[in-house]
Amino acid sequence: DDEDEVEEVTKPTKKLFDDDGPSSTTKPTSDIATPIVSNVKPPPGTEPPPLPTGKLGKTPTIAAPPTTKSTANDEEVKKEALHTQIETIDKRGKALFKAKNFMDAASAFTEALDAIDAYLAESKSTTAAASLNRQIITLTNNRSAMYEKASMPDLALHDCDDILSRDVTHSKARLRRLRILEARYDYTEALVEVCALQLRFMQENRDKLRMGQQVPNPPVPQSKIEELMGKLIPDEVEKQLNIMKNQNKEDRKLPSSYTIKQLLKSFTGYNAWMANAARGGPLDKFTSELNELGNDIPNDDLERLAKRTTLLSRRGRRNVYEQKFEDAKNDFEAAYKCLNINYDAIKDLLEDDEHARLLEWVGMVRHLRYDLDGALTCYERCCDLEPINAELLVKRAGVKMDGGNHEEAMTLFETALGLDPDAVDALLHRANLRMLQMKPIEAKADLERCLELRPNHILARLRLAAVLMGTEDLDGAKACLDKAEAIDDASSEVHSYRGEMYFAQGELKEAREEFDRAIECDATNPTPYLNSALAIMNTPPMLGTMPDINGAIELLEKAIEADPQFQAAYVNLGQLKLSMATDLTSAKKVISLYDQGLEYCRTAEELKDICSMRLLTIAQVDAASALKMESLNMQ
Image (cartoon, rainbow, N blue to C red):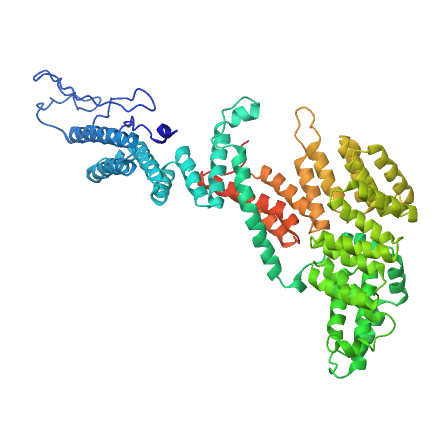
């Protein structure tokens, strides 16, 4: 409403002077009405005599003749004259506003502010400036409103900043800043203003909110935050993706050991790989032979380079067997670097399938580090060597899936199944793609065929249970989990999945028991820590108690310790820690937590949630600082 933009200028009710002079006895009739300074003068000779000016407890002195004014009275006269002048100018400014002469109206309010400045420059009172602060704010707000309507956003923002430097709670100035900033596409600062308005609203109504009483509508709806976040998040995600692209691919971290083991076990060749690595001999054997060979091999000594390539590749496979995945990655990359000294010549000197297996493992470790282009290069070279190897096609499809190229991934799965219709790996991983494509019926068919071929394929049973839970076939999901547990009752994944089923049914006590068993079976599995924390936060507390937030925080911290790339744990941990932050320093630590999580993100989807929570937390902290609040906590 245009009328709401302009405020009434009220005469100050506080004492203007710090001496013994009189203060104004005129009081405004309401908080918003302009007090009228009467222009009616008493008839000559009927003016009341001035009050005695003696001190309490002393004999009053004889009043001076009415024509003699004390310094205090001089100040009072000047003050009354100022208020009369302001009132006159204010009326003129509002009349110009109603006539839509916005810049003329702004000039009028400037004139009033200049009059106050002139008065303060001459005033000897030490409290005059403070007593006029409200009027300065009101006039500045009115001028700011005129600037906004006259399409002078810079001047309007300058006045808003001046207002907020005097009164951080001034909602009209914040709303005006919000409008102008949003019109300028400065969504980051606009979000701060929305958060400030919401924080102030919650602060003013915290008792009612705590007791569940009805409160007025907030100055801005929650949808405004969602709208601004929707505009900010894509750019922030793109910014983080560019940081990732510019990062040295060799510096990218591997996933957790648990994640790597689960991926390796998803391929039917896993047991054969491990058996082959075990037969190759211990790590010390390879290290000793490499030391004997030496590092400084001339580039034309092809035999020794081929030998070094082979030893590094085989030690890498042994490191995989020992679950020393970082060392394995380093060995495979070193072997590939050695091979590339003279690729065409050295590859022909490698024995048996050593060339193909090196390319396959380098492709694997690059895929794990999310070097998708590097992984594809190695897998494609390997496919040239072994064109009918269906497993290699599945791994190439996995890289395409992670890169978001679902159609190309599907083509590779179909090619693999064309080579081998009973390729269990292709069926299992194509089911994952079907689930990403929200095609549960097709995913279910692939998994059921997989289990026909391999009834003891525990991962296929767990995936099928997840599909059935997603389609609300809880009886079918339970039957799948029972069969999976019969195959391996010590499987952490089985108990984690069963806990998720109980969680979906609202049986939180049973869910927590299963999550605890999953952790007992394998403390490196991060998922049950997260799920157990969510179960705690969703369990209604007993009467007179609070949820065990500290317990949930501890579980989430263990989830991140187990898997530093577990993005969902960062998001939930940040939210809980922010709710418990007792000061802004603690709140800022949540931002650092999100920064840590961003370092491990690999995809736009992973970035989205953390970027969203980080942006909102920064805005809330900045808003609280602007409001001079010491905490975001409203308790």
